[in-house]
Image (cartoon, rainbow, N blue to C red; front, top):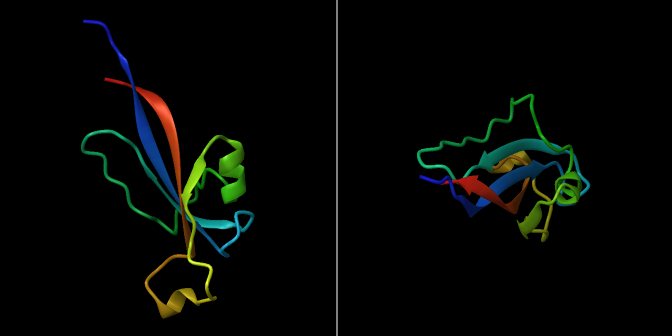
Length: 95
């Protein structure tokens, strides 16, 4: 049986220090289009693939959601890690 490639959406959640695409990323979660995959945001993770949202864009990721820019908040005020950007990339995966 031939192995076919299927186009699928990958999602990358980047949490930045500020609501700017050039702000430092402080946490990341990569959601792969693979059955039974589990993804968690780990603010202690050492391996952050991109230092900024802009760097991810240069690598081909598209921003599909920007954080609310209406006002500044402190992380300790709500249960959120930084400003959340959601990016997508469509890539071929084996069936």
